[in-house]
Amino acid sequence: MGLFDKKYCDICGEKIGLLGNRKLEDGNLCKDCAKKLSPWFSERRNSTVSEIKEQLAYREKNRERAAQFRTTRSYGEDWKLLLDEEHRWFTVTRARDLADANPDILDYTALTGCRVDIDESRTEQMREDADGKEVSYVPPRYEYSYDFDIIISVNHPYFDEMRFRLNDSSVYIEPQSTVQRPMMGQRPMAGQMQRPMAGQMQRPMPGQMQRPMAGRPQPMGRPMMGQTLNVAPVNFDPENSMEYRKYREMGDEIRAALQQVMETARGGAAAQPTAQEEAAPASAVAAAGPWVCPACGGQNSGKFCEYCGTPRPQ
Image (cartoon, rainbow, N blue to C red; front, side, top):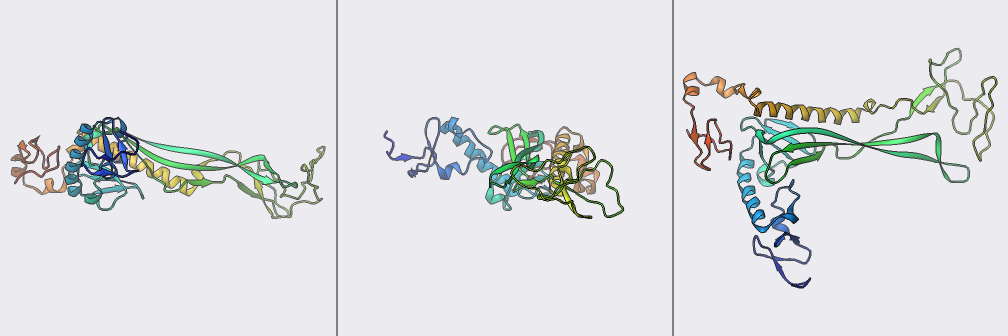
């Protein structure tokens, strides 16, 4: 077949437009069918037509779960971790309408781990000298930026990781502290150094020589009493930023919540009865034995099918 020959989707059979083909290992996939795949799935090009059909069948069953999902706990702002403690399901999504968006709904037992990844980038700030050239500050000054990612490890047939960002834009921090020249009669705090502002000259200590900045004459004079001066920080700590702490604490909260989910899946916190179970008479709880799901045929003992989420028949 030539490059511009007509191609048809091996899933739905529809004609594929010029830029709409999504190549599979042994066939072609249209962009509309590709949108139905899991958003966490990244092995499309290495998948066969048969494997894609299997995943799309799973995605249709997942849609039923998404419609039944009832959020009991939510974490995050843009991307959110949602928990359904009744069904013991969780999902990660930006959508408000789960039934329409069809995010992957996972059992608690699918969760294998979680970590918070804080990515730091550093950019040197420059200044313009007397000749109009960009030069470094002395000592160098930097602006730092941070991004906060959650990486959830799962045991799933179509993906093994759910990674999403907590902050919708990078957190920028310019670690430039300020000190104030003491007023008349005051003494600077121990360990503080004072730097003159640009264009001013600091009075040298006895026995010291003052060197003017390269290319720029320095007028005589001293910073005025009570004037605030910029000083390069000795120990920069991003925790001093309120925005940084906000997302770091958000990540810690999500990690702690998922740790609890794993403990629940292992049977630790799972032994705690729900409010409905506590209110039910002992005879009703005792009568709850094993049952077969009418939808998928799975063997169960709880109030919902652990395979498809169907409620226990009354």
